[in-house]
Image (cartoon, rainbow over all chains, first blue to last red; front, side, top):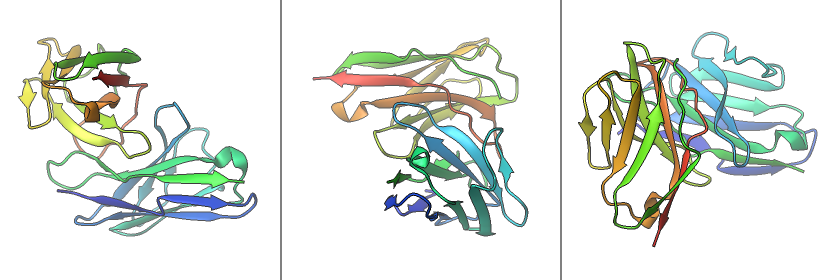
Length: 115
Length: 110
């Protein structure tokens, strides 16, 4: 079945540094990928839609200059959290829709802790 | 996409059927009902989806009312590993992102 891989699974960084999270579709091509953020005991919140060959689309209230998204190829999207602060500490999850009749598949998430 | 309403939490005895309800009264004709679950600190896992007919797979059954305004996910024989947050989502079939509601936290009790 369709598999979405996310890397790293967890990362700890210092305040003010930038962190890059990768999302790969392993056995299918994805022209779009979706990035979510989840705070403890809360639901997943859609942050942005990553589009191969064009700019990402951000949800209302999400700072595009802080959360840089690059859809480098049909199998790779990256989310860079720039100048991270402790309030950016969260669980970040990507997903992609395979072609055909498969439902949306999710990566296993990246736990970001900013100290 | 239509919004969904789910009870915040439920308990179920191990080995019994777990019935998780979902209301989606504003669903439109071309929107499917999807169910996912999320075990702590993992990405959501697909369970099942349907349009208007009841569906069954190796994990669960999905019962959709005739007016499509509500549905029920049934885990026929709940195990401790089924303890998770279950999300009911409605969206058009392909290409659109999912918007998650608050979900139901299911606890399977030994």
